[in-house]
Amino acid sequence: MAEAIFDDPIGEKIAAAAPEVLADKAKKPWARMLILAIMAGAFIAFGSIAALVAQADMGDGGAVRLLSGLAFSVGLMMVMIVGAELFTGNTMMLLPMTTGDLKPGRMFGAWTLVWVGNLIGALIIALLFAGSGGLGDGVGEAAITLADDKLAKSPAAIFCSAILANMLVCLAVWMSMNARTIPGKAVSILGPVMIFVAAGLEHSIANMSLLPLGWLAAPGASPDLIGGLLNLAFSTVGNVIGGGAVAVAIAFGHDRLRQSAG
Image (cartoon, rainbow, N blue to C red):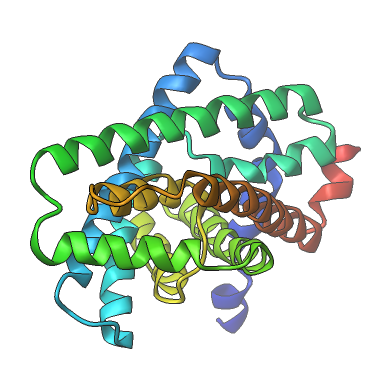
């Protein structure tokens, strides 16, 4: 009985299928990939808005951060359930590249297109939300505070934080791949995402909406575009390392790197 409970082969099955699944994602037609990437950027921006609403007029306590993480997790749930293309999740394409199922050129092309599409989707939602008047009262103040905190970090802090953030995000994605139902996917995503948001870690795609929302909430101030670009650059590189490491490590742990390559 104990063996039946703990010797669950689902994790091994996902590790075996992951290289092919991730490679197929990278081989989508470019136009379809771009549309799905714009959608993913929009979904994560909705999560960013939900997190800011949760923080509005609530201070900066641990419970507020956890609530903010709970709210933000809805964005990744939408991405996974709809099947949109999110750059941070796609960093796990390093796995099929490692096993030989995906050529480096195609991987980098997919990464670039999805990153740009995520940015477009994030900016569209940020502008629409600001235009709707959503940044009034405490929501705007929360956006300004959060953007200022992110821009005050050193490049080293952003880089290290981004590695941790995408380790958690990709663990959420990987675990949701094991879930066979929508509630199961939601529960799988909730925990890791809540940790990364509550800890204030750096997620490049979330920052594509959080930084503009902070700037839009303070129209009289000049946006720190250079600081924003540096944040996105260092968080993107850190996210690649964190997400790729999770995928390759899990596959190696299940002895799937050798088998896939062979």
